[in-house]
Image (tube, rainbow, N blue to C red):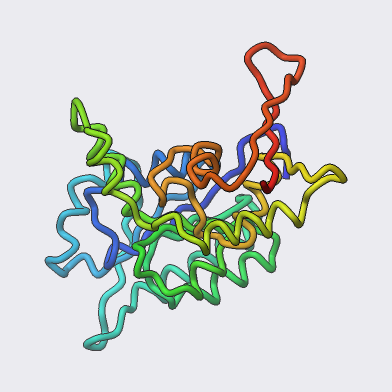
Amino acid sequence: MDNTKDPRLAVLIDADNIPHRLINGILEEIAKYGVPTFKRIYADWTKPHVSGWKSILLDHAITPVQQYSYTTGKNSSDSALIIDAMDILYTGRVDGFCVVSSDSDFTRLAVRLREAGMKVYGMGEQKTPSAFRAACDKFIYIEILEKEENEQKQIKISPQRKKEKVISKADKNLVSLVTSSINDITDENGWAFLGDLGSLLMKKRPDFDPRNYGYAKLLPLIKSLNKFEIDERESGRKNVKLVYIKVK
């Protein structure tokens, strides 16, 4: 992969279990990780429950893929998405995939894509089975995207309202995760670089995201736990500091 360019991503959306109202937030989130070169969405478009998607596909240049439901209770669009993902993989034209779904049926697909050296980003609801979340390099909850979109629509949000809108609570499990991760990468003086800590946390828990706890960035979340020392060091560049974390 050419590191001088943004990674090219194939965005594959399962329309059956992702709400169309979140498409702007989904695409904005994906833009943080690369440039979508394929954008496809899968459904039986004869069904009324996906009608909301039809009016917005053209605006976002997303290609709809029709897959008829041949049997009752079986989601045939899953198979179409998986087949397309493997076809795209073998073209060699992307550096990663973003699978937007809450369906555990894509667990093996995510594993296979990573085996082929692809970065795999997952997006889905908090109810997404842990197996699919763990199979991705990073997994983002769409509830967070919905929260951010609602906040942008409001002129003013009280601190109490923001605090209520969290997916996970900062508890002893989070403290244990951060503590063990710091110990894994600490230098001889007990300090760990914040950037390395963030990377390790995401490797250990692909669904880890400070936004799940109500914080936009990792540093404010770490500070809120009151269990760690913070050292902000000069980097030699204006307005840029290197942040290190240590267990108290």
